[in-house]
Image (cartoon, rainbow, N blue to C red; front, side, top):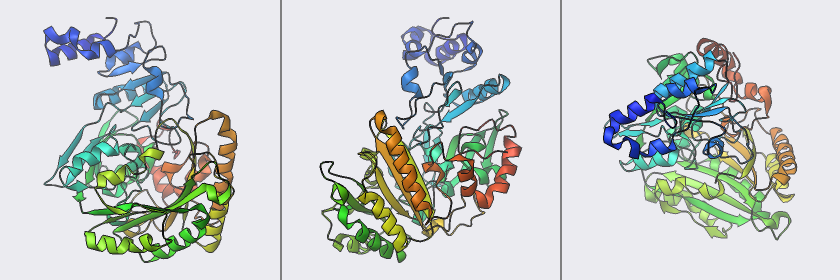
Length: 487
């Protein structure tokens, strides 16, 4: 067969009937893998498609969200289900080929793709099931938050799901999962109640508080170190009215904005999640006048209470632009999508902080005064605490629960010629903010060059147990294309 393996053709025939096989669009989309090709045996074992470098769809399939990542895998296995994942893991292990795993492909470090490896692409696995009686939701490994939120919202339910709708469910959850509802309902990983996992030896396991509980503990914040999660079961919560949006201020007011933000968050109830920051505004201007400072907020609860709690933000300044109002959660989840589109070159730094001191505010504002790196660059500080801090450091792999803030630099620009200068600026700015930090960073915001010491510092409280679990489930470090916890 030139365009479909025998197994694929039989499966298609069984599903469609013999008269419709030749008209089925999968027939035209499937790749040609010559019998003499080293990966022909893998193609034969898959129900999904194996994309090779010579195939027309290879370049689009290997691209991830960060436009700076330009790597060429040996093949891309587009998995349609657990069977394809197991077959690919087994083939790669038997033939000593490295693998990477792609869920939503949104991770800034681009760990989903690697030269000469087989990419296990979960993008076709986008099944979602919501159980309104049990208030649970299941998402396969290729689902993105916008799709999951759409299904849960239709039934009046929500869970913590980041701040950008195009983020993948898998990566965000495995790394912790900061989001608009985190202070009220905890991190994404805190709402995980069960996971289906394919391990390095090709086994299929369920992980929950009752079954393989050690693996379940590690998945909640330990990243992709322990296996491939093919589906996630989340605890859902009744959706409440949302008061949310952003207020904008002149860049020269950034110090005042951050001082207000510090005082405002000091007494914020758990129903309120707030962040503040700065982004490049008018490129024709220079210095602080070029920037726009901002405060963004989300209140989940009764409308009158929410309006009362956001009123200080609306009154402070006053803002140049006030977009804070009642809105659907789905709309809030897309508020930052415009600045988070795929293809931009991106390089980030993140630091957890216990306090937002005067010195930290001055350093943060001083970095912005000097000019941010790249037209799309922003800096922001997320307020943590609330439900996050009510879980102990050892209850999940995510251990930085006592931090009150997360300060992040999102370097972003369109032109490769600016890479060196903008990366250097972001590194230097991140190093300056480390002076006020706990020493740990948010793994979902880490780039690929921060090194093992940074990962060890982030997981320090739970590192010994994480290594033990890694040795149990992945002793050869088969899954190493991540913020790696070596066995």
